[in-house]
Length: 432
Ligand code: IMP
Image (cartoon, rainbow, N blue to C red):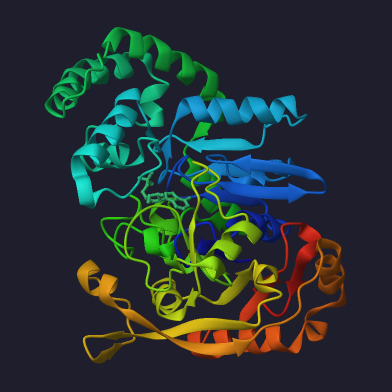
């Protein structure tokens, strides 16, 4: 049975929550492998809408294990809040497991996130202010507090005694006025440790045992390839690796265990945060996508910047992640448009660019070259549900032309087409 990765091929917000939930059907375990509560996953089951920032979306399926891998940065306040919210909605949440090696977001990380953003000026990424970057910084600098430390009160105290005075100096150096009290932080966070300790274990042992027993394991990506710390729009992305490779290091499995990599791709592009965005539409067409697609950040509520699908961008993701299939989402949002454009290459300085540039100055000057397609009629929400039930072959011909073009350009087959947020608004075209 396969290890299957589901990840985003754009700037995050591709609709991974729904696709992950769909793929979770056949898996015995769902594992998040990177990021933290900067993510925002929305899952709609019947009339109930669930929004998560940290918990793997598989937590909604009590018969499956939902695992927070070592690659995450975990804010225990958010973790406990999400667990308690679910308990109030009738879930037991006894299927949650947390890697002892995951990092902990501490109060000073959140303070420093804000101070650094202010200090960075034009280099600011427009972060979610959740302390993600400073926590990953500490992980790499070996100042981090791991979950295993959080549940060991003595170790936690010893580490905080060394770390807090240093963080205080950093806050002051940035002009911050917040005062850190090591004793108070210790007592608060040791309390969180006591509340989560029953969920904690060596997650890689659990995950590898499942794979060895031929069970299907689903690795749930957060953010998107173009926010990846290595392959994204540096320095405007996030601080973790968001690519298929991160599923291995962020969960503790070897490459031979992964058979499928599903690239979730929105039928257009959106971005919350700063940085170059070649196909951005600063007009009523982009505004229409934002309104109709509900393109407002799940985590921060900020309006997302919107634009046409960019296959230079998605091609970069197809290559880096060795995608085995595409899950195309929110294609219903494009319904009712007369013409739909897709960017196939960039024009820069009189030449043509086909590979996504690393240089942000060049990227910001790239002009998209578009191929234009005829649009298709719009439908009501029920109309799209009916269309989904009738299957791929009966979808509007112009929509199929658009999807076929994506497949040909990217050399990756489309496995799933999503025409709305509900599970029933999902069409299976091929293997995924
Ligand atoms: P951070 O991850 O909070 O450090 O934010 C860094 C950048 O990534 C900002 O531009 C955020 O808006 C963006 N970002 C982080 N997480 C997500 C996500 O889940 N979806 C979309 N954008 C995100």
